Amino acid sequence: MIKKMVFGFGKKKTHEQQPTAPVQTERKVSLEEIPGILHEIELPQMAEAVEIAQSTKKEIEAHRKKILSLILHLESDDLKLDDVDKSLRVIVKRGKNAIVSTIKKETTTVLTSATKYDQAVLLNMEISQMLKKMGDVLGQNSRIIHIFAKKYADNLKEEIAKVAKSRNQLQTSINTTENFRTDGKIIADLSQKISEQRTSIAQKNYRLSEIELEVKSLKDTISSLEKQIHDLKSSEEHTKFLEIKNKIDPMSSEKSEIKNVIDFQFSKISRPLGRYSYISSFEKPVRKMMDELLANPYDVISPHNKDSIIHILEAVEKSVISGSISVKDSEKSTEQIQETISKLDEFVSLKEAYSKKVSALEKDLTVFDIKSLESKEHDLYKAKTDIANMERIKQKLEEEINDGNHTLAKNISEIESDVARLTGSKVLLK
Image (cartoon, rainbow, N blue to C red; front, top):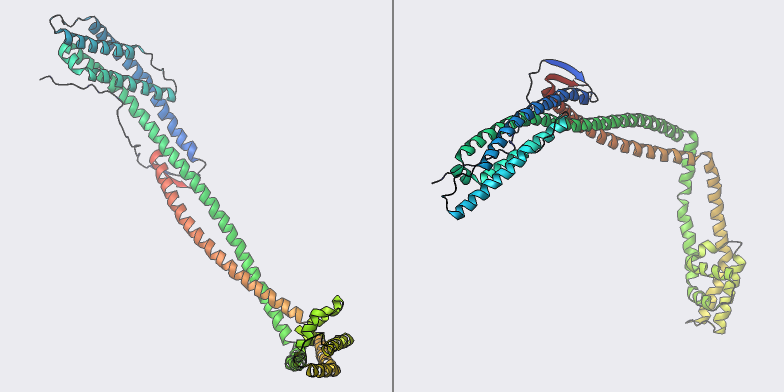
């Protein structure tokens, strides 16, 4: 039974962790200084990777020459296939040609000369691809080469392993630098976050101080308004104002009584008055007054409107008598209209007497500036509402600041730890 040997010299999978140096010193740094500190560490790592790339290339070029020499010998070797079955001989030659063609190409291709870090990375990739292609072709033809070209197989495996070993040194150096760069990117992102958090907290603290000043100002305003209102209400003028107001308020019942009397009287003639409104030929102002008499006669009755009201009622009376308006009892309707006309003077007198009494009392109300008091009470209510809103905003801001400080402290601790791990120094963020 023939054992299959797999040639695998692809990219070495490494996950090196950035070495943690012992913390020896302590330093305070600002966020702005961190990129420069990390860059100072990164530069030597990149330079070292370039140096390793240069030495690795020299080593690998030497190994490639040996591999090429082996392949050229293999190419010219007939492998003593004359006694081999023809079909098998075809397979062996095809496999041999594939090996020779691939490895000749991979050992003669020009590799990048690394003078910069990016070129070192490119060189590492080229070597890894070279190893993979050689490993693949040898793996695919493993049985052929181990049966018919055993001496070449062992030597090729040995030289390719040396190439892989040299490449692994470069890979390790690049991994170290790339891991450092990844950590640096994480630190940069965290620095940006901390900067934004500090700005946000500073803005909220500034707004909080503004609110505290506004609250203090509002409290002073409230105290001042309360004193002014107290002084106004304690004044002799306000006392007199209340006494007069207490006399006026009960008079609203007197007005209601007069209004009820007038409404009752006009309710007696509402049917003929309402029907006449549909057939009247009065001009618009008179028609409007007639509609208002139906809706609210108290407001219409006045010395100025008396003659117009009589004119309207007499026109209604004539229409009832002539039959132009259909009513159940025309005689009764006529009597009620006449009664209403006769009571107009009484209604006018009642309203005027009431108005004179109220006007006299209302004139005395000017002893006190009630609008000033109402304005101050309105301002007091607004100030108290504003201060309540400010207190709610203040509480919300304080909660946000506390949460922000907690998150900020956590992020600062994290970045201090990360920078210390990379620099080997205990770091405190300013």
